[in-house]
Length: 355
Length: 255
Ligand SMILES: Nc1ncnc2c1ncn2[C@@H]1O[C@H](COP(=O)(O)OP(=O)(O)OP(=O)(O)O)[C@@H](O)[C@H]1O
Ligand SMILES: [Mg+2]
Image 1 (cartoon, rainbow over the protein chains, first blue to last red):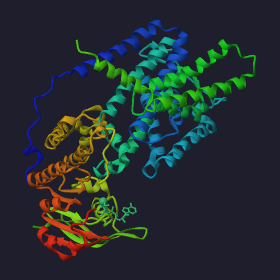
Image 2: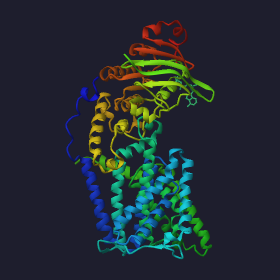
Image 3: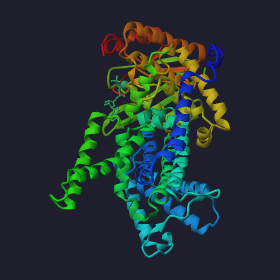
Image 4: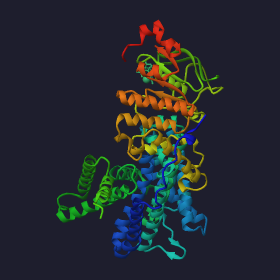
């Protein structure tokens, strides 16, 4: 019996080591790094760094985390914030109880603990799909606030059950200033973006998408569906755990269980919906929207000088309604999310007449 | 020659609807066996039982000398049973090449850590997968569509991608559920040429469901006729063609 190898001609000559597309990609990455590590810290004010850029970047990372699970593997989670809280409480306790552990190790271990928790709450994915699976991850969203408020051990017996960020430093560099915290966040984010690309471009990512598009066909081809689904929960939760540490330590400075409530999980979900599914960079557009829109609405209220018209509560509600309306509007206009802008931009760039 | 697949008294029902009724037949190693019969006869259900998507209520299935019980689709794939689908089951948001690569999953030996960080067994796997996929893509004339998203391709091309995805893992037994449905005459001729070529060149045993009797008579070595989950006829094309029961009931009818 002959095999395909014997009878079919070998493929043509090897492609050049760097194609045009690869060069373009390299250029984009280099430009991104220059902007993130050179221009932004040089020109942004402390207010911009602390109140806008850091939260946008961290929430973008949360969007990536959920997008790996939902956009690529086709699974659901309503418990993103719970996995973030596992990360930050792990980091806090690691720093507290294992003195001298360097920051990168703290982040890595916190991510791994969150990953293990994620796998546990992802186990129902082996039996259920869609709605019921959502219910299980929602369970995480109720379990962890309960755990962290009822067992003060997790917050080192603090009266307020609040944990405060440790002094952030790495290799002797103090990361406490806004620029320091920004560089910390940007470094971790850059590494995780790289990791996310490695994941989605690997066999793992391909098999996630296969399961997402056609689960029966995937299993018939021998894809280990159950294992892949659990790996999706593990990796997504790993990302979320680290994101949670950044949110608590680099953005807020303090955290408690309720910092990571259901509202936050929904924000992450909106980032994925607005940014677009199965995208990496789209999440930052979604995050920018989630972070900036409320700030803009606040400024609008101030500018319109309507504060005297009614009480603050009514205005806050109005802002929520407008916020919701904008989300619905975007989802109707761009059902594939704002990442469609990135795609169109890239296509326009490619279609540009060659010079 | 010993048979590759042997079914005895296989039955399957869905809440009272009998899809397969004490069905027995054997598929010889290296042959093309066609399953024909009217709509709802149980042909697709039979394929689903063979590769573990459905579990038979009763009966024995022996594949490659081993009796299998409670088989799951993934296990069937790893034993070497490939499959295409009657209704489009491609990974619609992936490219042709990615679909074909996904078909190689059963040959993957690297852990996900190796796959993600591209070390250890991943290097060999990537090279091997890529070479195998490219060969099958070339064999099925899909080069031009290689990097296209499958949902943007014509129906006939999608059927070919489905075949490529099943073929790439070099199965011992290939189950094809209406691979020519919805194709025009030229496309059908081309597809049956490809199927015959796969069988001849690689020795792959094929079980094929097809309504076009003209095509079946030209392609199959062995025909099994089903109706209401029962076997009505079983034999060489000439014998089946001249079987009065079959003539009366099925051949010549248009489905
Ligand atoms: N998942 C299912 N649930 C319930 N009934 C089913 C299921 N699959 C098949 N059936 C029933 O089993 C019987 C056989 O169906 P099957 O799809 O195997 O027929 P077929 O021979 O492939 O027909 P066609 O030529 O239309 O593809 C039909 O009565 C069908 O309604
Ligand atoms: Mg059928």
